Image 1 (cartoon, rainbow, N blue to C red):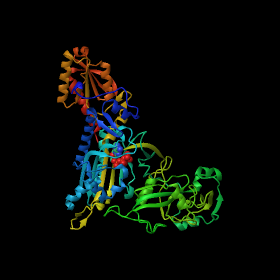
Image 2: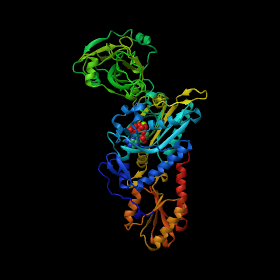
Image 3: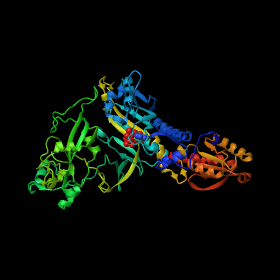
Image 4: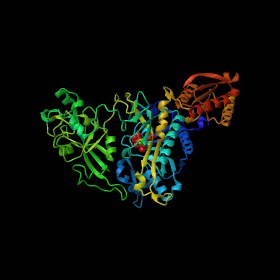
Length: 612
Ligand code: ATP
Ligand code: MG
C-alpha cells in the first residue's frame, strides 16, 4: 500500500478536548475523527488496528469453543420488557419507535437478545453448554462521554453469553473466558490486573474485571503488598480491625459496665469532624447513621420494620417481585464510609443512594446530621459489623443539636440486618493474608460475570434434563470493550513522538521511507515491498512528495513498528536502514536479506506476545 493512495490525515495538533494521550494520538495519527460527543469514526489506519484486535479476540474465542453470531443492534423493546430492564435501564438506553409505533432499543448490551435466541432453540440438556458471542456496536447514552473512545456513547463490544445445566459447567466456561481474556490482553501487549468485582445481587465470587492501571481510571482498586489479592473497591473486603462479639448476648455482656446512654448538647455540631473536635475524641468512637433510599429492592422486606405495607410489584410478568422504593438506616463506625455497591448487593437493589434531606428529616425526625439508631423506628436498621464491637459510643439522638453518649450495640439498639458494608481503604489489611492494602486507579477493559438464573428465569428459558424434567439453565456473560482496549494499548505504548504499536495490533508492520520515491530508489523500494508482502509482512510505502523529516515524523506518530529507510547512497552500497520504533538506533542491513530479516523480527515479536 502506498501512503499517497490511502487516507491518513495526520495532524500536528490535537483538539483542545483531547486531554489524554491516547485520544490525542489517535486523533493526530489520523486513526479517528469525531462526529459529536461520544461518537467517533475510525478512519482506515485506525480500522486496521481495530480489525487486528477483532481477529485476536476471534481466535481466542474459537479456542474456547465460543461461537460467533450476528444479531441486530436494533432489537425489539419487548425483549427488555420481558426481562424487566425496560424500566431499570433508564436514560442510558436509547429507544426509538418504528412507523407502526413498536418500541425499539439500540442495544446497550445483549443479554436479552441472546437469551431470546437461545430460548427459541433450546429443548434438551444435550444442547448445553452453549457459548455464543458477537463483536458488535453498542449504544449507551453516557452522561459524560470522555477521553475519546475510552468512554464513548457508541462503542464496540465483544459480548459473550453462555448457558449451562449446572454450576460446574458454568464455572468451567467462566474460567475458560478468564484465561482467554488474559491471553487476549497479553497478545495486545497490555498489562492487566484481574480484580474481584461486585457481582450485584448474585453474591459469591462470580465476577471478575480486567483493569489497566490509569491515572484517569474510574475505578479504585485495592491490592495487597504481600499476596496477589486484588479487588475493585466495590467488592474489596479487609481483615477486621475490631473484635466482634460472637453473639448479641455477648455484645450486651460487653456493655455491662457502660453507663446508661445519655443525651448531651452538641450545639451547631453536624459533621463527624466537628463532633470529634467538640468532644475531643476520635471518629472511631462514633456511630455514624446514614439514611439510604433504595430502588427496585428484590429482598423480601415483609418482616422488616416499617415495611409491611410498602408497595411491591412485578416489573414484568415473570420477573421477581420488587419494592420500587424503600428506605434504610445504615450504621457504621464513624471513621468509615458506607460502600454503596455492597449495600445494593445485600438488598438486591437496582440502586441505592443517600436519601434526600427531606426524607431524612421525615424518617429520623431531625435535620441531617442527627440521625442515630437509638429510638429509630419506622425503617430497617442495617448494622455494619464494625458497630457490633461498639459498647460505649457517641451517636445522633434524633433531635437537633443533641447526641447520645454511652450508646451500646445490643443493649441500646439492634439491627434488622448485619453485614460488611465498609469501604476498604489503603492501609487496611488484606482479607487473605493480613498484608497492607494499597490503592490504584484503574480502567475496566473487560468483565466476566456469573449471572445465574436472572435472565433465564425472567425470560422463561427451559430445557428437559436427562430425566425428562423441565429445568432452567444457568447463564454467564462476558464483555470486552474493543475501543477502550485499543486506546489502552496506546496509553501503555507511546513516547513523546507518538504511538509505539506492539506488532500484533499495529496498522502495518513496516513503513518504507524512500528519501525520494523515484528512479533506482523507487525500483528497490517497490521490489522490497513486494518481497515483504510475499512473506506476510504488511508494509506501507511513504511515496509522498514530502521532505524526509515530515515522513519520519509521521512514521513516529503513527507508530508503525518497523521503519525501513531507502536512500541513494546506502542503496548504492546495497544497504537499507532498519529501525524498530521506540527501540535503539537505526542499523544498516543488506538489501537482499532485508525482507527476510524483517519478517523474522515480526514473527519473533508476535511469538513473544503469544507465548502463553
Ligand atoms: P463502565 O463501568 O466503565 O461504565 P461497565 O461496567 O458499564 O463499564 P460492561 O457493561 O461491563 O461495562 O461492558 C463491558 C465492557 O465494555 C467494559 O469492560 C468496557 O471495556 C466496555 N465499555 C463499557 N462502556 C463503555 C463506553 N461507554 N465506551 C467504551 N467502552 C465501554
Ligand atoms: Mg462492567
